[in-house]
Amino acid sequence: MKRNAKLAIRLIIFAVLAFQMMPCAAAQTSVKNARARTSRSESGNRAQEIPFQLTERGHIFLPVRVNNSEPLWFVLDSGSGSTLLNKRLIEKLSLKVVAVGEATGAGEGADEVSVASGVNFDLSGVKLSNQEVPAIDFKRLETFWGRTVDGLLGYDFIRRFVFEVDYEARVIKIYKTANYRYKGRGQSFPITTEDDHPHIRLSFTLPKRKPLEGKFIVDGGAGAATMEFATPFVKKHNLLRTVELTETKSLPGIGGNVTISYARGEIIRFGRFSIENPIVGFPQANRGAFANPRIAGLIGGKLLRRFTVIYDDRRRRIIFEPNSSFARPE
Image (cartoon, rainbow, N blue to C red; front, side, top):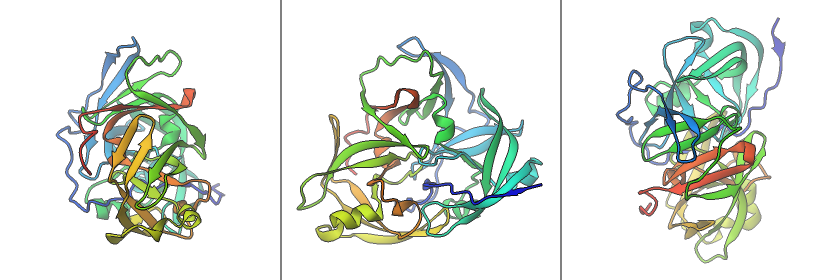
């Protein structure tokens, strides 16, 4: 018998921030060519190395097998606390539904969700077995993106390992956490993991304003976003007072559409890194993920793809190594 539950799957915002409204152009790697190989890093750690597709909107697509299926396309989304399935896979893979409820995200409403049990994942040899996984209807997002989305790998999956995302090489390296040692030249930042999301503190400056600091979700699923602010943070600091908005869009997300206005900031600073003249977003949301009063906002894929990003949740850190795109103007 199915159990009823009101499932609050918070901050599922990976598909909302498609600022560059371009057709989705995948990288050269195809499913059949996306074969993992084992490599050894400079530190001597053994890693599973997996090629990925990086779309023009900045989303990472990985081939994942679910219960011995053919390879399916999943988005890697550190901004989602939960791994999700496309609801159509329940029937296609004959999955057992054990609960029903609601999922909330960037939109101000909620989407119906079913929870499937006995789900097994195989990401090119990296496996998780017997999971209970929420499933929602991705039709709205698939229509917007113009491609199939079979699911997403959320931070609940990522945090089980050390995930090294090399945007330049379009390769992910996955390490076991226990013996991992980092010996690169990147900069390490402390993170807090709250509601199954990684948070980092950084500062930013808007035109004619003094610098402000805040806690931001590291959201690799917000592919076309550099920085987006939460509505309570915008109101608290009156962020719209000195900015000149350039455009406003209504974009789809979990729970419905969200309206976001855009402007130019002056600078984003974290550690020794700075991003000048960034495009920043101001969502107009009184409910949903962007109404969270505990965060300043998020940093997304347009910022992250300037680096190799290493998620190391066990050691409460994230490491940024700048790549050749680091100094590219936005």
